Amino acid sequence: MRHPSDSQRRADRLVVLGGKPPRAPGAVWLVGAGPGDPELLTIKALKALQGAQVVVHDGLVSDEILDLAPAGARRISVAKRKSRHTYSQGEINRMLVAFALEGLNVVRLKGGDPFIFGRGGEELEACREAGVACHVVPGVTAALAASASAGAPLTHRGSAQAVTFVTGHAAKGAEPDLDWTSLARPNHTVVIYMGLSMAAPIAARLMAAGRDPATPAMIVENASRADERRVVTTVAGLAEAAAALGGPALLVIGEAMALAREGEAENETLLKEARA
Ligand code: SAH
Image (cartoon, rainbow, N blue to C red; front, side):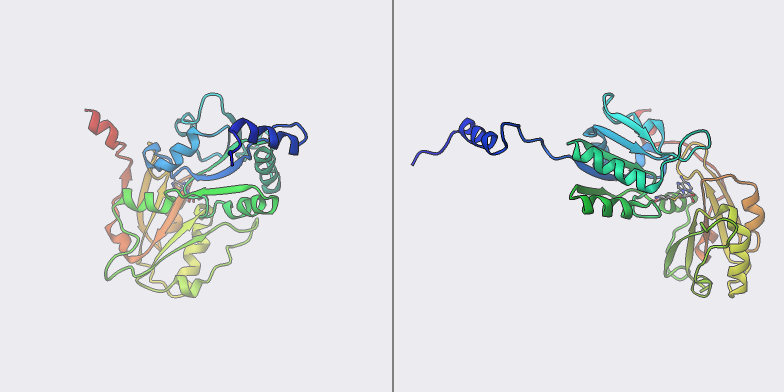
């Protein structure tokens, strides 16, 4: 039997679809942009960006990274800004799904990792409900960049057998609702995202739950960026140290932070060194 030619197959499909050529389905890529330094972007994230037709990004992503998308790609900022409309999570979800259903390749670019306090899970669920393909590209989360630049490991033999990531974010005026007893356990690193403005009550709660006030701690602002700043302190000194910083910043508490180095960003990139 003769096999049908490609053009015959295409023609058959056109008849089935009533004369309209089928549109290639779009997809959503939830991409982690890393903590700020473009060199901390993964190769997979770079490739996803290079294939993007639409880039939907939040405020933590730098122009240097956004410029890696094709010049013709549509860029939409969903950053929270006082002066203009702020998109709700529902609106963002609907936007991603709508672009993908139009047949576009959508990159949803997020600071750090999309699944660490990034609401990536909600966007993934919205895609699944709408039958839209959704791919996830992990990113270097802020905690990893903060620990690397300070030279203080998140786990360390003898002084940090576990590390816990928590959010310090809470409803307006309220304190974060966390398991203070477990966070107060010694030989354990606690990383608090979105906790800068809550540093005083967080430190007080930890000490009340039994964490030694002398436990080393650090705050890292703008980890991996040119304007990175690090303050090394203790749980007892956390509130005072936080008052001097503006964020985005992480509070990192734990015995292993005894290794942390204070300071500004060294701002020397491997690429610059390699080119020299
Ligand atoms: N998905 C992101 C976190 C988003 S929540 C990630 O994986 O890193 C936003 C919070 O992350 C900020 O309030 C701050 O606490 C922290 N953060 C993000 N980028 C940071 C950076 N470069 N330096 C320090 N903290 C950062």
